[in-house]
Length: 212
Ligand SMILES: N[C@@H](CCC(=O)N[C@@H](CS)C(=O)NCC(=O)O)C(=O)O
Image (tube, rainbow, N blue to C red; front, side, top):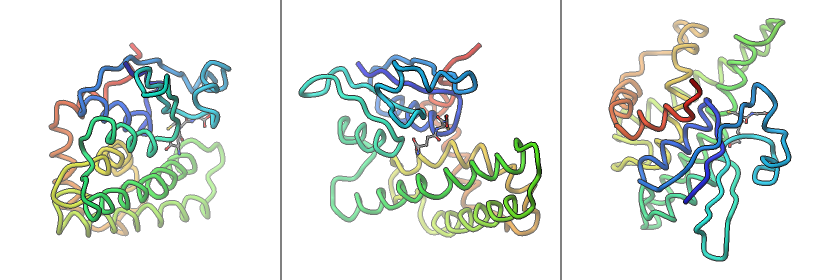
């Protein structure tokens, strides 16, 4: 059994989609980051960076194992289940480069754009412009990839797609609104988004945690 600590955000949904796709048994502990629950001692014991997602694998060899950082969680779950990550060196490298690209690129850049364009009490044009330009650039990189490959890692659906889907599905509308014509049409991304949105495991993972 795996315990997933998560909330209703893109980083959390990467882990719940992966668990659903892999068919691994898990229980959910909701950590309401809007109410500061990420700073409670119980959560900090598994996620010292006070961010969701985190997991505890109670069935790990050697005893319960806690893991924080969404990329590390996806990699661990893929290796544990033997799915969604190729085993040949080249295929594995392709998936990992796009997984790390997501964790270092769209995650933080889209997140900062959301903060400065939507949430910040003061609208700072330089900050909005910086994160908008970088978000448009990243979507351009992704579009180029998906025009020639069905999935980010290549021919097969993988943890790189799972990492990227919750962020792009949440942010592409905002980026289109703020960037206007700077964001060119994205037929490759649109095709990929529609395909992933139709996957039952993606739909189940996107509904975690249930808060109502
Ligand atoms: N690099 C981390 C980022 C995780 C992250 O930013 N989580 C946000 C929610 S999407 C969070 O827990 N924020 C709470 C806080 O910053 O206090 C990962 O990929 O897991």
